[in-house]
Image (cartoon, rainbow, N blue to C red; front, side):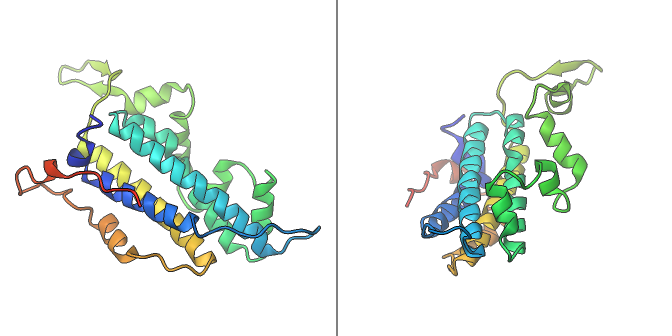
Length: 224
């Protein structure tokens, strides 16, 4: 399944491009250490955004690896990227740097509070089911209704392109947004951002492929 993911899931390419974009930004988002009792707002903001960016890129790459192996439902646990995205937005919305400082000192509130206003509360609660030993994680995502009325459980990996592609695009979109937020903070211009946005909006090859085996010949792009 891992060897065929590039051909079978076109959105995998988009998620990869988004994560590479964020990596490009992180390589240029360093900051000087501050010596003193009261660092300025810019210090707290830059430090918090850098840390959040690292969490975002690793979370996205981990989700990609899980999907590549056929464990689609388990990527829901990696949707903590939603929290990273929300906290990054709260950092940049607070010019005083106070939210960034509180987050770096573990005083910025619980995850559910951070995403409030950015995503439906019940949606975040549903994602939490897959992060814990919660029976609802099985009933919501791993129980299959059969035509005869019975129910089967899904213990083995599978690939449903429509599900995996949609999930990957969600990760790509949030990763892209985190990259843009950090780039703006540092006055960076992200190269080829318009192309990435277009790929996220209209993912390549998500419609039925009319070009035969062309997709199967795709090779993973090299990492810059």
